[in-house]
Amino acid sequence: MIATFLAFLMNASEIIRSIEAEYIKTDLPTIYVGDTVKVGVRIKEGGKERTQPYEGVIIARRGSGINSVITVRRVFQGIGVERAFLLHSPQIESIKVIRRGKVRRAKLYYLRDLVGKATRLKQRFDRPL
Image 1: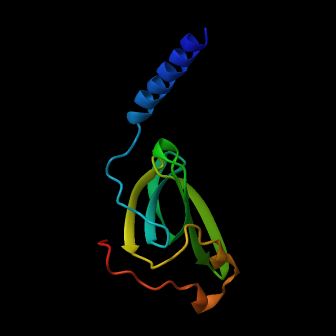
Image 2: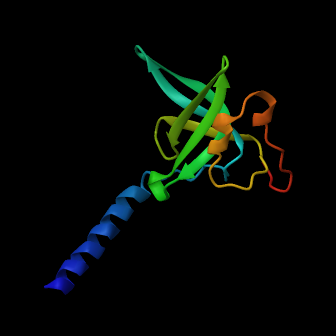
């Protein structure tokens, strides 16, 4: 009985993985925490659809596979704005790496407390754009 249940679970996870494989994007660049990126977000206004760029620093990355999420932070009119993006979402049209940041942390939540020029990250040159 337990063996059949385990076989069913393994089969279910294979089915889920095969369905998810259809929606995973393959054209994403390699992105790291600390990178400055420009994310093209599809926005519907009325009957029209346009792409709105959102540029900022990746302060966190979590999840794996189709559930991978990046959190991008930018300062707009003196106010810090963070936005989470599902990488494989159809709303994300493009992701372009503008510069690589040199960081030693997996999560850059400490940037929330910094102000002005202190929020800048050193540039990293050993990874290609």
